[in-house]
Length: 245
Image 1 (cartoon, one colour):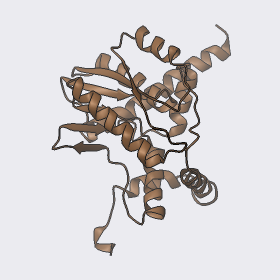
Image 2 (image 1 turned 45 degrees about the vertical axis):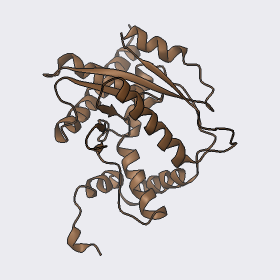
Image 3 (image 1 turned 45 degrees about the horizontal axis):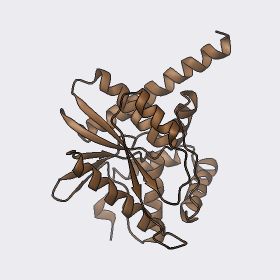
């Protein structure tokens, strides 16, 4: 093994340890996982979701509690993806996995992002119910939470973001977000270093609003403060209600 390979391996171990620590902190801070949990993991095949299940699988090995991971991929009718590599990854790691087909288009030539997200969430609730599980792990990361805050602020005139733990139908289902402290650039690096089976797909119906927010945040970090995103994220936990209307 040459020097470059050794350096790459060391970096891979380091980034996985860093992400695992952040995931562990999120799990403890918000009591996301309990002993005996059966957890549906939404795996789109993107770098975030593959990082999520990779880290949860590692933590499964040494966590003081026992929990089961059930990977689920929602197969959208407008996605032309080769799922062979994803299914191979599931099989190699001994998962009971599920591919859930979902018809989004329904004869239409365009899909609204809100409707697509709502339909995917509904499908996840249904399969979670069939599997007798309660918790659904979603791979939203720190950047997603910050971007959602700005999207709601600017385009919906409300102050809200993604919750670490969302409870639905009288606590029948919990959506948990273990990557909430993890940055997008970290999941991208881990997926590349570990050669995870990423399914590359650009949604043809994705709107431009989130892209505008991403660009805005990049400007803030470049021109104002390199910790701008972290400061915004921390501000969501330090709301001074007495100074709101």
